[in-house]
Length: 318
Length: 251
Image (cartoon, rainbow over all chains, first blue to last red; front, top):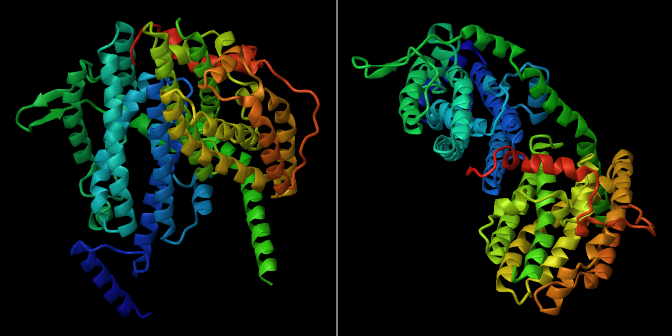
C-alpha cells in the first residue's frame, strides 16, 4: 500500500470515529489503534481476574449465608467480565494464552488497587463502594468508545458494576449502623481504601502519557483529574450518610468551584505499587501463575480428550 | 422441639450442601481455567442457595427464633451431620471433580425422590434443586471423562482421586434415626434404595472414562453421626470465623 493510500485510509478512519461510528474487528485500523486497544482492553480483563483474589479471600469467611451468596455472585460476575473482555480483545488478533503470558511475566499491567490486602469483612464493603465506584466513573464513558466490541462489553460490565457498588455501600451501611465494633471496622476500611481508590483514577494530567491520543479515539472522555474530582464529589456525601470520616484533613467544600478541595495524594506510594512493590503484588502474581501452572495438566487433558473424541467420530464416519 | 426428627432430617440433607459449597467456594479465583473457575463458583453458589432454603425451613420448625445463620455457623463440629465425602479437601482438580461426581450422582437421585415428599416445602425445594444438580452432575461427569480419558498423567490423577474417595461412598446410603422416622411418615427418602442404581451409574461412567472401578471391601463412616475427619475443624474455623469473633451482630 502506498503512503498516500494509507493516509487516505487514516483520514477515513478518523472521520468515522468523529462521526461516532463504531470500528469493528474486520475494519481497517491503524496499527497504533490496534496496539493501544490490546493494551488497555487486556489490562482491563486482567484487572477483573486479579480482582477476584482480594474478594475471593473472604468467601469462606463471609459473616452470613446471604452475604456469602452475594459475594460469590459478585466474584463470579468479575470472572464473567474477564471472560468477555478477553474475548473482545481476541478480536484484535491476540490469543488469550498470549495475554496470560503477558500478565504472568509482568509485561501487562492490571489495576494497582488489587495489590492491597483485604484484612476484614468491611473491606468487602469498601471495595464495592469505593473501588467499584471509581471503576464505574472510569468505565461509563467507555460504553461509547470507538471500538465496537469493547463498547458493547462495557455496557454489560457497567450495569453489573453499579449493582456491585450499591451492594458494597449496603455492606458499609449495615456496619456503620451496627455495633461500635462494626462501625470501627467500617471506618478502618475506609481509612485504608480511600487513597488507593483516588489513585485508581490514574496519575495527574501532566503525568499521564496516553491522554491525548486516547481522547481522540474516545477511549477517554475526561482527563484523570476530572474523573478524580467527579469521584470525590460524588463519594463525600455518601460517606456523610454513613457517618464515616474521610481520612483527609484537607478535604473541604469549595463554594466557588462547587467541588471539594482535597489533600495531596502520595504519588510515591502510587508508583511504588505500580512498579510491583505494593503490599500484595508478589502474592497476587504467585496466585495467578500458580493456578495457571497447577491447571496445565487439566487443560492438556481436556485437549487430549477432545482430540480423541474427534478421532473416534471421524473413524465412525468412515 | 416438637418436630425434632424433621429438623434433624433437614440438617442431614442441608449440611452436605453447606460443606461442599464451602469447599467449592475455596477455589474461586484459583481454578485451572477461567471457565472451570466460573463453573465451580456457580456450583458453590447453587449449593449455598439450597442451604438457605433448607435452613430457613429448619429455623421455622425449630420455632425458637434461630436463624439460617445460627444453624449454619453456630453449631459445634459434632453437630454437623454431613457425610465425610463432602468435607474432603481440594487436593487437586481430580479430587475436586471426583468428589463432586461421587456426590452429584447420589444427590440427583436423592432429589428426584425428595420431589415426591409429602412435605410440600421439601418437595418444592427439591423441585428447584433438581435442575441445578442435573447441571452439576453433567459438569462433574464430563470432567471425570475428560481427565480419565485424557492424558496418561490426568488418567493417573483421576484414578487416584476415585480410589481415595471411594471409601466414603458407602456412607451416603446409611440411614440415621431421623431418616427412618421420616421415611415412615412419607416425608423422607429411603436412601438404601438408591444404592444399587448409584453404583451401577457411577461404574458405567467410570468405565466410559476408561477408569477402574475400585474393588473395596472396607468403607469409612461417621459424618452422619457427627464424627468427622481431621479436615472438618479447619473448614469450620473459616465458616464460623465472623460469627464466633463478632457474636450477636447483624451483617
